Length: 449
Image (cartoon, rainbow, N blue to C red; front, side, top):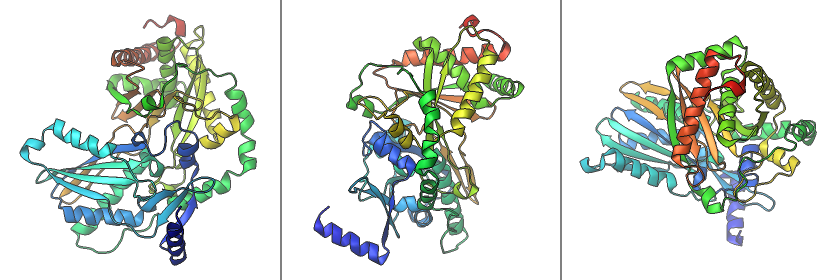
């Protein structure tokens, strides 16, 4: 850092214009445990919000300003440090918003999608900030898209719902002609990070490490072929399938009858399908956890989620029902012994290598963060989720409950897995689910897929 910048930073700190905080544990994961550089656009979380109702550029700017004032991550950037980066939090910030009024020829879905992709791919200046960007696309008098690109360092899937709720509340204040700010969050992101650091003292981490040393001993990677950094940074492609409502109901009933969670049921099915697809019997997946158990943090925007590795062996001679109970108990044990992923990789000495994230190659998630539909008089906001998985793994399966149906999003590297192969894997998953829902006592080897 230049002497001029040091002097300016010192002045800001003394005046209270900025404050410095250590990276949170999830942020450390990005800097210490990812094969992708934090500045790469593959670390962007991308989504959009459909807005129905009259919306002016001025009203939208004022609403986002209220969100910026309430949520400190909207005023956060990352400053290089001597040992590791630190968070720089500004006391005030202005909305990062652009307004696009489309002509009739520009309103075609393909043109709108291209405009969104440009916004998603545009890099952020991690030092200067802010680490989000809102593009307001006006498709008609009462038809708008709010395209949100936000860096993973300040956001997770839960954050998107918090943003929509705050934005809706801010518009409600405008509609009612009220001035002033939104009420402060109960727990700021920096306060949440401080509480996490206070809990995860060395003694707390060390007593859980032996569990993971045993649990992950001898685990094999699913794919050993080297993947260069350019390939890792390329966007993951998406293939979306829908498990119909009748099979979704059957999956929930299967979980209920065996006193396990829907997550454990779908994970067991996923492992069997992946084993048939790859030939592997010993499979480790990384699954996200929200880390928002306390009510105070549920309205806070920020990267709070963690990753827990789950390992399981496919034993073809066992009935599915036995495997289901084993997977459920194993998952419960892993979640009970979870530690921040950056601390786990450091303790195991498994650091990122070119083309590989530490410990796991496959992500599996049953998304449970809120996807809100919010409304104020004359306006409605609907969050349309794009998968929030960033390109730090080779293959991902993210399941979201869609009424009684299940939406299954497959994320994959097209240079490693042709789309046709992913479609085959998707068909395997649904076929296994259908069979075990009918005959859960069937041996895994006897499943006819």
